[in-house]
Length: 348
Ligand code: HEM
Ligand SMILES: *[C@@H]1O[C@H](CO)[C@@H](O)[C@H](O)[C@H]1NC(C)=O
Ligand SMILES: *[C@@H]1O[C@H](CO)[C@@H](O)[C@H](O)[C@H]1NC(C)=O
Ligand SMILES: *[C@@H]1O[C@H](CO)[C@@H](O)[C@H](O)[C@H]1NC(C)=O
Ligand SMILES: *[C@@H]1O[C@H](CO)[C@@H](O)[C@H](O)[C@H]1NC(C)=O
Image (cartoon, rainbow, N blue to C red; front, side, top):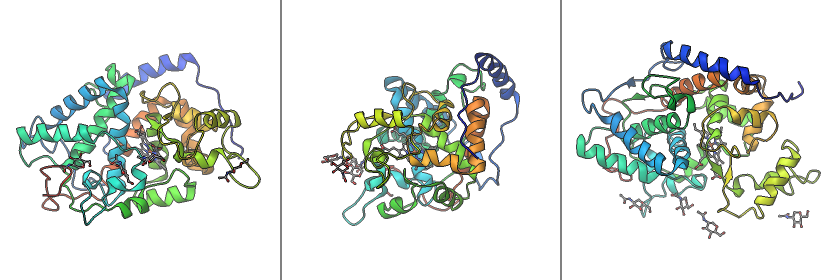
C-alpha cells in the first residue's frame, strides 16, 4: 500500500477530544494487556506511604528548572527495561573490572542521573532501604511524561495528575554490562523486522512498539544517530530516500559532521518538551528522525497505528499508558529476588 500523507485533524476535533478526555478519566485504568508479573499499583502504600509523592516533588522541581529533563527521565526507564529487565542496571557505575551500561555507546546522552540520585537520597532519609532504584525510574518516567502532557497538567485527563497508574514492587539487580546494552538496545538504524523481534524478545507487541516509539515526541537527538541518513547513504542515493528531501536538507545544514556530538536536534521541532501525538504526523510525512521511526510505516499493523494516533491524541495517550505498564513488567525481580540498593550507582 502506498504511504498516504494525511492532513492534520481539523480544529473542531480538538474541541471534541477535550470532551472525550473528560470521559476517559471516568473509565477504569487498564493495567497492561498481560498478567501482573508480581507488581502492583501502590506497592509502597504501607512501607513508605509518601514514596510516590516524594518522587513527584523532585521530578516536578527538576522539570520546572529545566523542561528538557522530562525526556532523559523517560528514556532512562526504557533503557533500564530493555537491558536484562527493569532492575536498575542502567544506574550502576562502571568499576575497574566491569564496564557498565552507563558507559556503553548507546548511552549517547543519557542524562538526569542527578535527578534519580536526589530522589534516592530523600527516600533513604524517609524510608531507608525500602524503595528500589528501578521503581524510582518507573515512577519518575511516569511523572515526567505526565508533567509534559497538557491534558494531564490541565486536569482534563485524571484527578491525580497522572497519565497512567504506575506499578511498583520491582527490586534492583546486581549486574550491569555495557556489552549487553549494545546487544539489546534498539538502534536508530534498525528496520521494522529487527524492531519487532527486539520488542517480541521482551514480550512486547507490535502495538507496544508503535505506541512507545511515540516517546520520541519528547527530547533531542545528536548528529551521530542520523548522520548515515544524510550523506553518502548508498551508491545510488546520497540521502536516505525514505526521509523527506527538504527535511533532510535542513538536518544536513545543522549536522555538518557525522561526529558532531554537541548539536542538539529536536525530535519534534518546536515542541520537544510537549508530550503529544505530533510525532506520528511527522512520521507519516516521512519526517521521522530515525530510520527506526520511519520503519513503523513498513508494517500494516504499525502503519495503521501511526495513522490512528495521528488522528486521535486521546487514543495515543491511553495506549501509551498501557504500553508503559507492559514495558515496566519486563524481566522484573520481585519478592526476595535482587536487593534494594542503598545508592543507585552502586550494588550493596
Ligand atoms: C523503538 C526503538 C527505539 C530506538 C531505535 C530509539 C533510539 C533513540 C536514539 C538514537 C535517541 C537519540 C540519542 C541521541 O542521539 O542523543 C533516542 C532518544 C530518545 N528516546 Fe528512543 N529509541 C527507541 C525507543 C524508545 C522508547 C521505547 C522510549 C521510551 C518509552 C524512548 C525514549 C526516548 C527519548 C525520550 C529520547 C530523547 C532523549 C533526550 O532528549 O535526552 N525511545 N532514542
Ligand atoms: C558514579 O559515576 C559518576 C560519574 O563518573 C560520579 O559522578 C558519581 O559520583 C559516581 N557515583 C558513586 C556513588 O560512586
Ligand atoms: C557514555 O559512555 C561514554 C563512553 O563510551 C562515557 O565517556 C560517557 O561518560 C557516558 N555518558 C554518560 C552520561 O554516562
Ligand atoms: C561523501 O560524498 C562526498 C561527495 O558527495 C565526498 O566528498 C565524501 O568524501 C564522502 N564521504 C564519505 C565518508 O564517504
Ligand atoms: C564528542 O566528540 C569529541 C570529539 O570528537 C570527543 O572527544 C568526545 O569524547 C565526544 N563525547 C562523547 C560524550 O562522546
